[in-house]
Structure formats: C-alpha cells, structure tokens
Image 1 (tube, rainbow, N blue to C red):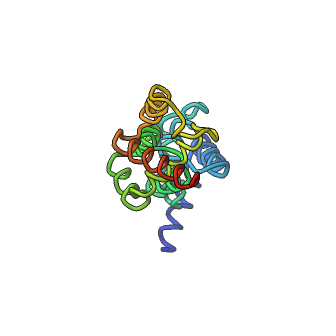
Image 2: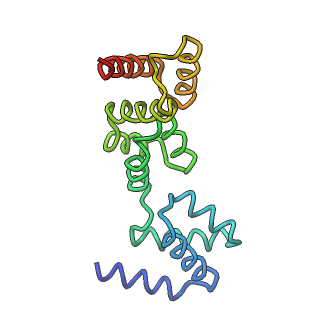
Length: 174
C-alpha cells in the first residue's frame, strides 16, 4: 500500500502545471458536492482544462476513491426515492452519466416496491393538497391519474394507490 501511495505522489510531482491545477480543481469541486465521473469530467472541460489534464485529474481523484458512481447512485436513490418514481430516478441518473449496469445494481440495493408505493402516496397527497379524492368527479380523478402517469408511475400502481386512498378516506369519515 505504501508503494502505491509513493507512486501516486511521484506521479503528481512529475505532472505538468496544468495537470496539477486540474487535480486541484477536481478536489475543490468534490468538496462542494459529490459528483459522478461524467459530471466531474464535464466540469473540468468547461473550466478550460485539456483532455490530458482532465484525465490526469480524474485518475488522481479516483486513486483516493473520491469518485464512485455506485455510491453516488445509491445515495441519490436513498435521498429521492420517497418523492420520485423509479422511471424518473432512472432517467435522472442516466443523464448524470451512471451506466445501466451500475444503475441496476444500485436499484437492487436501495429501491423496493414499497418505496415506489410510498413515493406514489406522497405524490398523490401533494397533488390533492388536502382535497378529498372520494369527492372528486370522474374528470378530476382522470387529471390526477394523468399527472401521476406523467411523473413515471405505472397505471395499475396509480389505480391501486387511488383505491387505497379512497378506502382510507371512507374509513376516516365513519
């Protein structure tokens, strides 16, 4: 292990000035917030670093384990699974550069069917804003259903949660 650290420090000391600045910029960006490999690389390019300097910086931060797309995806899922559908989460993570293989592993570790249902209940509650679902007419219920479907929830899941919600409302009024 000490040999690996010694090689890293000698590689850093032999790096060009631009590569050192890129590595420093990468470390500062990661201090602000966790990022995916793609996000960090894009930020370095936007900062004006060459491909070689950005590659050096990526290797440098990865050697310390500061970039881990699986950890990022798991953290993102655990933070957002209560308020977003599985489909929306998948879309957002793919746009952040998470590979499909890593995404599947993260979903297996962090996201269950009960999470999807809890998120759907949360979105329904947010959409209703205190109104009673059982008091709504057919068209209004269809609008709520369409809203939830656009958020990425499956129609059978939406109908199931809405039936459960109405049942809960009828039990509360008794």
